[in-house]
Length: 226
Image 1 (cartoon, rainbow, N blue to C red):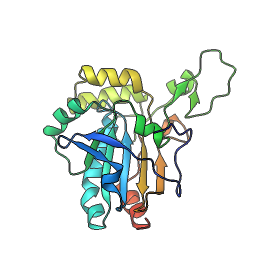
Image 2: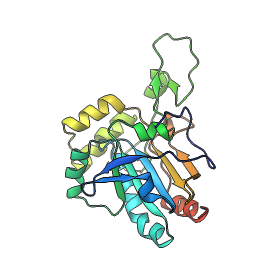
Image 3: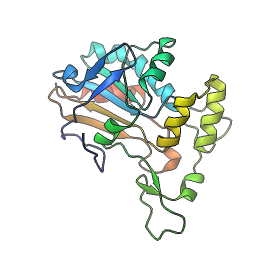
Image 4: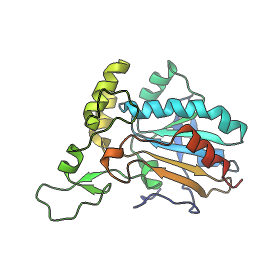
C-alpha cells in the first residue's frame, strides 16, 4: 500500500488491505469484502474517547446498513492484543480491524497533522502542516458532554476520566507515535471504487472530533452504486 498525499475521492479505486481483526482470531482482507458495498472508518487508537463514541455509533447504524446490503468496517490505530482485550468486554457487531502503524489510513489518504518548526517561514496548510499556536488555540465540544469547549487534549483527558478509561502501555505508545492522526470515513462501492468520503476537521482544528452522523452515513450508503 502506498501513501496518498490527499484523501481518496469518489470514483477512485479503494486500496486493498489485510488486517488482524479484534472480533476474533484471524485476518480480514479487502478481497473478503469484494462484491459488496461497505462503509469503512479509519480511527485513532482507543485512547481517543471521541473515536470510541463513534465506534458505538457505527455499531448502532450497522443493522440498518446490513439490511441495505452494506457491510460496516472500522480500522483502529491499536495493537490487536490490546483491542481484543478491550472489545472482549464491549463486543461490537461491526468488523473491527487493527492497524497500529496507520498504513491503511495512509493508503486511503487520511491526513495526519505535522507541526512546522518554530520560526518556520513555511506557510501553514491545515491539516498537513500546522503551527503549534494554531493547534493550541483550538477548542472543541463536539458531543456536548463538556461544560465548555476545551483544548482537544484536555477534552480527551476529561472524557477518559468520565469513562474511567485508563491508558495502558500500548495506548501510551500509540498516542506518542500517532497523536495527530485524523479520522476518515469512506463508502466503497461493490465494484471497489470510492462512493463517498468524509474527513475530520478539514476546515480547521476547531472541527476536530466532529464525525458523520448516523443519518449522514445512512444517506450516503443509500446512494452507493451496487
